[in-house]
Image 1: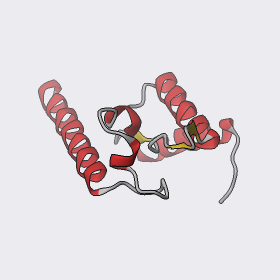
Image 2 (image 1 turned 135 degrees about the horizontal axis):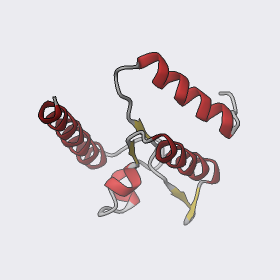
Image 3 (image 1 turned 30 degrees about the vertical axis):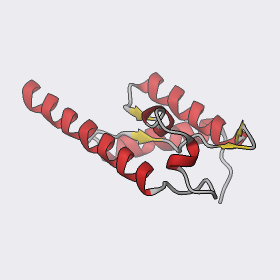
Image 4 (image 1 turned 135 degrees about the vertical axis):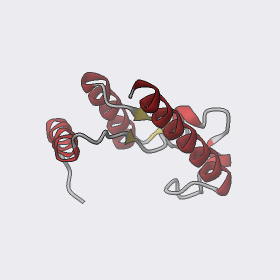
Length: 111
């Protein structure tokens, strides 16, 4: 693992976007888990940074915390906070599939 500055992360995202052009990118963050009732600082900071970068450059951003907000953390995350439960995985996968279908549908209408 390598710690990166905010600028390095931003530059990496822009470099990936440039490498994949004209294909579009979507940034998907981590679920913003809480440990002992408090957000994990490094994860929370990264999620906020990604959100800000995506807003700045008009890049689609998906925050699983927002997508899965109708469930408790215990319902959708395993105890180690690193993986989704079956419910969390199914719900998030369903959201992603619909998100992508909507993007494809909108592109077909525009083109």
